[in-house]
Every structure is written in C-alpha cells, then in structure tokens.
Length: 363
Ligand SMILES: Cc1ncc(COP(=O)(O)O)c(C=O)c1O
Image (cartoon, rainbow, N blue to C red; front, side):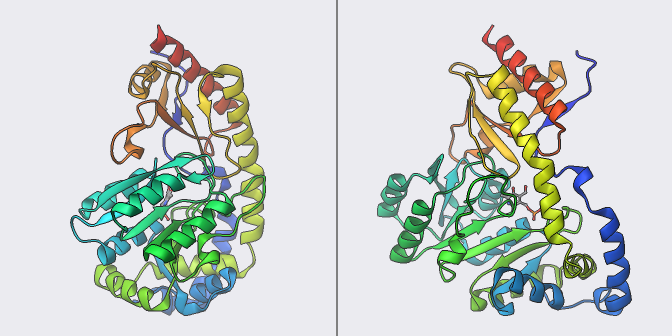
C-alpha cells in the first residue's frame, strides 16, 4: 500500500478554494437585515421572489417561467413525478449523469440510450429510436456533458429542436456547467432555440457552491405551475434562507467576477489533465472538453475500468465506476476524470498513478 496522499478522481465536486466565503458573509448579513422575517418563514414553492426576478432577468425570460428548488437534481425528481408512470420511455444520452439514471429508474422509466458522439447525440440513432416510440422527454446535458465532457454542436441542437417539435416530446436540458466555458464559442442553448419544447435547468452548485442547494428550472409557465404544486406537496417551500443569501450575492453583482475566477482556476486544471494524459497515458482515448468539470477516457483495448479501479487503490488513487453512466450496459473501458477539485500538481500525480495502474493491469 502506498503512503502517498489520496487522490480522488471520483465525483464532480467544486474546489473548496473557489467558494466566495467573504462575499457570502456580507450577503448573509444583508439578506437577514433586509428580509429576515420573510426568509425565516414559509413562502411560495416557486422560491424567493427577488431571486426569481433576478434569475428571470439573467436569462431574459418572464418571472412566471422560473422555478427554484433545493438543487437541480430535485427538479429532475419533480419532473419524473410529473411526466413518468412505470413503463414510460425516456431517452438519455449514453453515457449520462448516473444520479439521473438512478432517479429515472426509481420512477420506473424505461431508459432508451442514444449514443453520444464528440459533437452531441447520434442523430441517426435518435431517428431510429423515434421510429419505435417518442419518449416522455429526452434528458440531455448539451454543454460540457457529465460524464464525457462533450458539447453538442449547433447543427445537432437545431436537429434536436426539429425532432422534438415533429414528434412532440420535451427536451430536458440540464446545464449546470454551461456558464463555465474556458475556450471556444458558446452555442445557443436548446431553451434559447425553442423555449416551448425545452425545459432548461441551471444550478448555483458549481457557480457559488452546492451548500445553499439552489437549482432553477426555466420553462413554460403553465407546466411550471404544475411542478410548483409537486414542490409544495414535497417540502412546502425551498430554503428561502439560502435563496435570500444567494440573491444578495447576485444583487451585489458578484456573479460575473465569481464566474471569471472559476474559469481562471479551472482552465489550467483542464489543461494540466490533458497534458498529463498526453504524456503518461497516450494510448487512452481522451475527450477534449472546452469547459466544465470532466473529461473522460476510453481505456486501451483489453483494460477493464473495474480492474483499474481495484488496482488503483494500491496507489491511493480513487476512481469512479464507469459502467454506472451507461443505463443499459456498456462502459467497461470508460473512465470519468473530474479535475476541478485537484491542483495541477495533484492532477499530474494522479494521471501518473493511473498510467502505472493501467500498466499493472496489462501485466
Ligand atoms: C448534470 C448534472 N445535473 C445535476 C447535478 C446536481 O446539481 P445540484 O447540486 O444542483 O442538485 C449535477 C451535479 O454534479 C450534474 O452534474
């Protein structure tokens, strides 16, 4: 067993040094001074009104098109309650976010996977699946996808919109990494391309911190009313105390600087990860993301991720199960590398340990 410090390439946690603690202290004081009795009370299940107004303006929509909840994963759950009955078909990209797979399964959804290519979902596979059945919704992460790091091209975004309108299914666009682009050109969101067919989710978890648990859903006002009722029946009201604090953080115009400092912190970490892979593990096939928290690897032929995970423990390297991102099997050689919470030195060291592990597994 190694006596080296543990390195975790496991989950997409933000770097603790990115948290804006000082600005949040001021925001907390201001929020309690200004709204103390409101944010310590129950309120509307849509969330704290000033935050919703701020979020509406941020994305250029009306307030009735915004609902906030205790984290965006909670919104996925509400949408499952609304849309899914056991046996209903849902499409996801493959691979996709493992916690969404768990949630869809919990609601009895039949998951049809659409293979993900470096520029977005395989449109031929999507059209073939649609010949069988239109889904209740297609869950996608078009920007800096979790777990692959891929970003959907404009062409494919337009095609997705066309198909969703033609076949009458919603696009559930999960976009927590969208504001974190380190290079390249931003593409319009699916929601910007078609706000009627798209439900757009954002989150403060990767921007300010997961602690406040604030996720937001943008979409059709009437549907949001139905989701607000599910939210009310679940927890009455989301955490207005956190929403008041994060609202004051945003209202003091801290978010642009915070996002700029996240990009300055994370962009070199992505580059360090790509450089280390080129140097130490050139025969693993790596994605080359332009932002977000993850890149992913296909390990060399004959090397199973499950064996690598076991062996890596000898080097104090923790890795995440690759197959968990594949709803219907596959992913035996898939590995996700979340690099944001590690320093460039830890990333270089971690990739070196990974390369050593792969060499050991190959024998
Ligand atoms: C694609 C995706 N959706 C949702 C979430 C959960 O976000 P939240 O903390 O807002 O619940 C994550 C967190 O890793 C994620 O990667």
